[in-house]
Length: 161
Image 1 (spheres, helix red, strand yellow):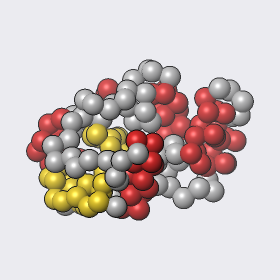
Image 2 (tube, rainbow, N blue to C red; image 1 turned 60 degrees about the horizontal axis):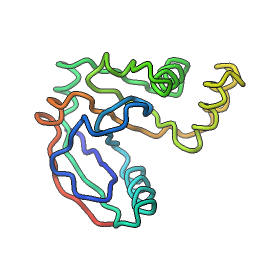
Image 3 (cartoon, helix red, strand yellow; image 1 turned 90 degrees about the vertical axis):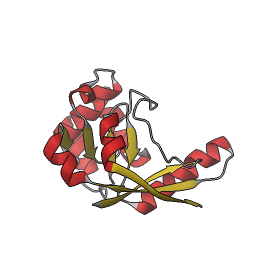
């Protein structure tokens, strides 16, 4: 079992995989992270935009069962495969639909500029990866298949931040 977090402005006891935006890094799904600090930052950003209270949702996740039963994709580092996958999804190619769950680095504000330069053809993938190599890898887990949420992600608690 693995503890994961979701930053939001509300308590989410019963997450849905079909409510997210389709053109995100890993597609449409319910996003969590195993980095508490990262989820807290996401909650603060969303709360600031909405003028609402940030909330940290905490879950227990049986990732071992999921990895043995579902179509999983993991990116252990910022690499060319990750870069091409993220860019392709942002272009609307929906590569994420081939998977039930995807895990890897986030194209956050520090990464987004490099991704956009590569995406628009201003820098090569080698240059993009050189830029990304200096950044500390963060983590996101996109749960695309609702069955995984229903059977392997258990709401534990929430905290107002």
